[in-house]
Structures are given as structure tokens and as C-alpha cells.
Amino acid sequence: MLNLSSVRPQAAHRLLPLAVASLGLASAQAATPKLDTGDTAFMLVSAALVMLMTPGLAFFYGGMVRSKSVLNTMMMSFIALAIVGVLWAVIGYTVAFGAGGNTIVGSLVNLGLKGTTGPNALTGTIPTPVFVAFQAMFAIIAPALISGSVVDRMRFGAFALFVALWSLLIYSPLAHWVWSSDGWLFKKGVLDFAGGTVIHIAAGVSGLVAALVIGPRMPMTRRATLPHNVPFVLLGAALLWFGWFGFNAGSALGANYIAANAFMTTNTATAAALLGWLAWELLRGQKPTAVGAATGAVVGLVAITPACGFVSPMASVVIGLVAASASFWAVQLKTRFRLDDALDVFACHGVAGIVGALLTGVFASKYVNQTIAGGVVDGNWAQLGTQAVGVVVTLLFVGIGSFILLKLIGLVMPLRVTERQETVGIDLVSHEEEGYREAESSLSAPVMLGGD
Image 1 (cartoon, rainbow, N blue to C red):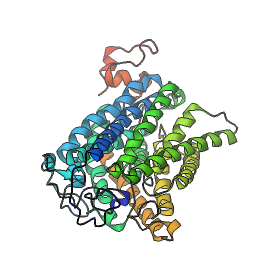
Image 2: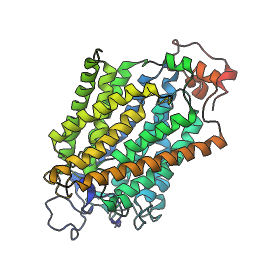
Image 3: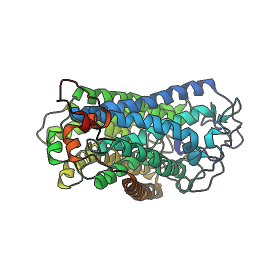
Image 4: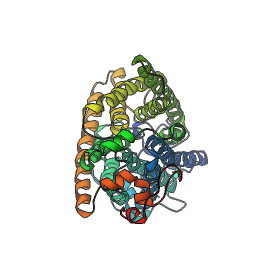
């Protein structure tokens, strides 16, 4: 049987061992893991929903860029599916959740998924391979999110290498810190139900750093960049919203009350954020836009992620509205800076993730989730400070780590395409394909071969 001491624990802040099948069990420590087919079915579906989010992200990002870049933008998400899908099984999982690790990194006991298979390999009430697969989908979408900051200019090969290194050296250790019972942020009491710090703040700050290191797009390219396919954007947002129910509710690791609460708060916060974003557009004298609605929905999904298993539905409305306001104005203010975060990854994921993580410390409730001490609403002001520590640590570790990785990759290969290639379009340069055969002029073979 798999040692449960250092895997991501079950419901709300995962303070009960994964062996706990429900919150009603009297003694968590004494519970013996037993396979629950209902929990297993629920988690299989949840893992599939989270997998769908990465192709959904491909459509969301792909619709946002110019037509010359749609294939490359979508391929950045698909390559993350492939690279991280393999690396997670080989070494990423054990770095994050390997039993018997220290406070910084998991042990290598599960290298190559050793010890995670067989009829007696259980993680709580589900087969360990289901837990591994579920966590793999989280690890996959995190670096895919970063791609929105560097579209139209980063070489595909350089991005692929960055995904591999970032997944192993940044994502997996951070997941260990926050979600493993051995991790130092877990021990400190940082609350992150489904990835506000580990995924969204991490992806947001990495995107910002990547935009800084790689540099802005050419002025001509930036002026030409308008969402070329708004229906793609709406489709992508819809797939993300749908998949996010598996992302958040599935993080309860069982079909239980906490999963039901996470499902409800996820939908409520997302709806509130969508309305909040459109309200800000109207207040500024604009029309309510489809891109704004899609962006607001994603912001709400991001913000509720760390809180969904800890807060009430009414608190989730506040979280969605505050996050929409913060991210909306972060997008407006970015024009004052020279950083070219092309698809506003930091504003939408970084800022909303920070808001969600901090408001988790405010609205986390013992009434909603009895395994936590609660937040400010329960008189526990210390939790807000703990959340702030988690945010700052994530910003520093991921920011510095991403900068170092990009600089090292830059010593091995160019990070960005040439000006000529950027003008022609990165789809043809990197993939020798066009998203719309008749929409753009063709490119001569010598230039096509000048990409990756």
C-alpha cells in the first residue's frame, strides 16, 4: 500500500489523511484505506475534465492572437500535454509527492511511478494511479498558461525546453511545499485547495518574467494583434469553465460534501466575476464585449481556486467581484509599462490568484470545512498573514527560478524568432502550416526553414 504521509491530502486544506473517506469519520488517524468505487468514478471523471482544460486553453489563447499565430499558440498548450505527461510519470510525481521526502522536495521512492500500481495501491479511497493522473493534469496546464505571455515571438523549441525544466524544477517542488504533508508551506498552514498559488500565481509571475526576458513584440506585430476569432475565445472559456468543476471539486479527492461545496462556489464566483468585468466595461463607457465576458469568467475561476473548498457560496460572490475588479484594472494599467505580457497572463492569473489566496485567509470558514481553523470571518486573523507568506514565497521562488531558467536556455538556443520571422508569422516559421490557408500570403521555403 502507498505510504500516505507525503501525498496531497484530501479535503479542505487536506489536514485529514487521505485515508479519510468523509468528514464524518471520528478518527482520521485510525481509518483504514478502503477502495470506494463511487469516489474512484468521480475522480476519473474529474481527471478527464481537468485534461480537457488544456485544449480549452488552446482555443481561448488561440482566438486571442492574430491569424498568423493561431497554430503556434495552440501548439504551446498541446506540447505541454505531451512533455509534462511523460515527465510527471517519470520523475515529476515523486518530486512533488514521493513519500518520506523532506520539507523542500519529495523522495525518489516513486521514481518511474514505482510503488503506485497494483490492487493494494490506494490513496485514500481511490486507486493511486487515479490520484497520479489527476495531479498530472494540474502539472500539465500550469506551464501551458505561461505561453500566453510570449505568443507571437518565442521559439517553439525554446518554449518546449522551458516547459520541461519549469515543470521539474519549479512546479513539482512548489507543489510539494504547498500540498505534501511534508512540505514546509503545508506545515506552516498555507491554504490552497486546488492551485491558486501552485498553478495560477506561479504561471502568472513566470509569464511576466518570460515577457521581460524575451522582450516585447515588434511595434508592427503588436498593432496587428487583435483577437482574430472571438468564437474560439468563447469556446475556450466555456471548456475551461466546464473542466474547472473537475479541477476544483475533484480536489476533494472524493464525492463528498466538500466537493459539492467546491462545485457550487466555483460556479458562483465565476458568474459574479463575469458580471463584474462587464460592469466595469459599461462604467467606462464601453459596450459589454464577448472577450471581456470570457476573460471575466476565467478570472473568477482562477480566484476561487484556492478558496473553493473552504468558503461559502456568498463569500465566493465577493471573491469573484473583487478579483474581476483587480484584474480588470491590472489590464488597463499594463499600458503604462513596457512589458509585453501579450494575453495578460499575470493580470488574469497572477493578480486573480493573489486575490483569491489572500481572500481565502479572510473567508475560510470552519462552518464550511471543519478541518481548518478558519480565517478572519472566524476570528483567525493569523490565517491572512499565513496566506500572505505563501503568496510572497511563491512570487519570489517562481520569479527568480523562471528568470534563471530562461537565461540558461538562452545560452543554449535563441529564445525568440527573428524580426523577419515574426513579421511573416510564427505558424509558418515554426510549423510550416497555416491556420487559414487563404487568409495569409504564403512563405518561401528558405524562410520557413529558418525557425526551430
